[in-house]
Length: 399
Image (cartoon, rainbow, N blue to C red; front, side, top):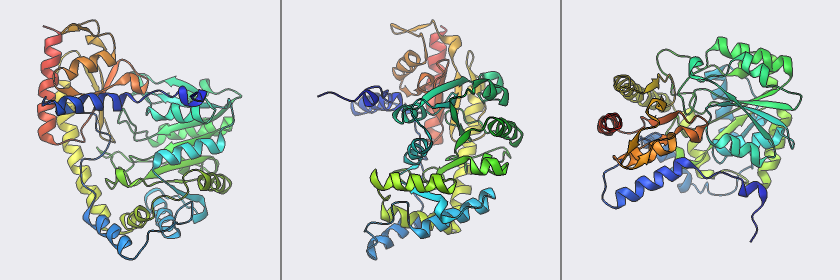
């Protein structure tokens, strides 16, 4: 059997690889604290679960329109207006089987073969794979720690060529937890307009934001940006509905129609029951209460983790303002050895840490090999124990 070139070039997920190793160790009775979680550790709220049960009871189990039910799309339109000040028609909304699906369809809708897509690095590890599958060419812009790993307008301008089609922007950001300010986005938007490029804005962590930071969608900054931005979001992070697989996007009408047509031949409609429950998630006032509660808990964990990490020598944590991750420069420890493992980069660092019962994600997966990512989407008890182990591990490296 011969696998296609596009598929054979897809890189395996390092996050899944580390997670699999940790699970194997746990199955063998070895204690492991997993800092790799990419989903809220809260159960889906009861009011949403009850809505799904109602969908089953009333027989809402058939096909829906490929781009989503009218009811859910109206709820999404209202969400954009209330939260972001963005006005969309229901025909500009496409609901998909998760935000990852929304991203892929968005990329496919605007990218031709060899079109360049600018991806600020560090980046969510799936972006390059989706661009490659769509036939585009990734152009990575190294965003250094000196600018909190955020792309600047000048960097963007220097990266644009006559083949550039779009920029993928992620705020709040995975893996760094940084949030772009309005001023930063205004400067970026000005370059996009001057050069005539699109933006795919991944705003999935929009509701998880701290320290009086304000989420701003780049689509709000001008008429040009509204007509040249595809905004991607979903219910996975905000309502702890990762397994329900509902993402959505808002786009200029022609692009939304093209994505809808494409989706009708790829995945068809998202799960009808999940759509029904997601409509309730967005419309019921219980949603705001749940988000506020979850955000408060995450903020407490965030503060504790960052403060603990700042007291550990030889590492440099970046203070996160959104999502639920801390990005840490551990490169000062490279060159050390642990139990016969030579620490040469983030992957060998993660392998060595696993021997101490800590599962973390190497930064090489996100395009920044100097760093690792820790998630605080685990219990405070596990965070405390995990950081105790992490600190002991670092101390052993420097013994």
